[in-house]
Image 1 (cartoon, rainbow, N blue to C red):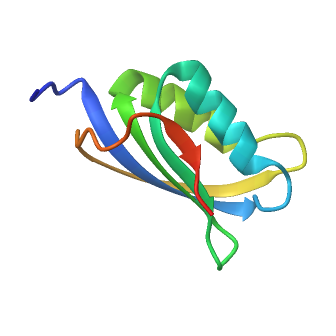
Image 2 (tube, one colour):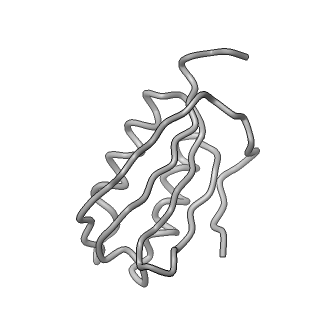
Length: 95
């Protein structure tokens, strides 16, 4: 371990991101990129994502999160990254 190329990032997405397929979009993009973690809706209307993987791949993933699926309007994406924690074996939607 101790590989600086890998990170764990906590992401909060604001905007019209609930009820528009945003979680499923996020699940598909994470799976296609080989990332692990979760996505879930928050009671305040935001979407929370925690993702683990190669830092460069996470940056590509964040680009997808900024765009979102058709019907979504992303206003803000807040990202905090940490040392890689290796807590997930796949990427899932949490309810």
